[in-house]
Length: 425
Image (tube, rainbow, N blue to C red; front, side):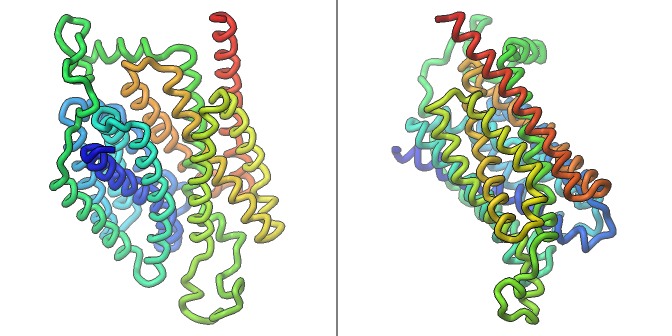
């Protein structure tokens, strides 16, 4: 990579890591909020779903704004908004204010993925390498965000932790103000001709009618099935992860009982082993991302998704029975869950590319994040409701419906691809 590539990858990698740091610190806070406030899992799950839902809903307009105003501006605004929302979270006196703070975070974070991915695709000459480092940075945030949050909660109140998490955003904004790069270095200087005889300097639609026309053209049978796959994944992903630290705590003894040291110390009492198992599960997901990415070059992506969804359905059904056997089976089933949950992401991302035209790729990924993060956010409310009504075992059995549906959609997409391939042969 040249200097411009490195500057863009550093900028987007930092922002990507912070987006997921904030996103996955929330389930750690949920454990505290359930004891801090007189609230049910159903109510708190709905409050969390507000922020996660806006995280997805804003992706589509975020892509349009990035085309209009530039990715640098949008990503910087994202960092400012996320920092401000966690500052509000640190002084939230009640669950409704928590919901507002998380909603502001969702709006701010929603613009990142379309803006950041557009910046890499248009500004980085070594595009594949750029996307690789960008994904690694996001995975680092996925694992380190909950870990840092859990460690800080050992020594300070959750409000102080939320305030401390503002500092990385401040540092990232300071870096963004000094970073210099060419956003369109990888794009040909001559603009492509537009359908009206002008030029397409920006990819943003000029009217609602043009946006609707582009969207209708995008939703072929294959793309529609791919969106259904993404929705099924998003609902299961958010439904499982939102309350998982709290659920794991039902099956794990205190740390002092496990290691046999300092069992009566205040530190052992505060050290929530479930939070660290949750972090380990997310860390295993990095390996899943790598494996899923490698599979996209070796097998049909729809076939890979069929296999992964089948595995996730089995894990969802067997999770609680395995956890009740003992710590060993719990660790094993958690590792498999983390691996499969993240192995699915590169598979469906490649599937979107296979079922959308290059000229509509930005719009296609806007819809992808709308479905994954927006519609998928309802999974948090679903799992919260199930936990409050049918318990942990019933919750996992209920959530198993989503990978089962994903299995069906992926299978239909695989058959559609094989049929189309047969016709073109």
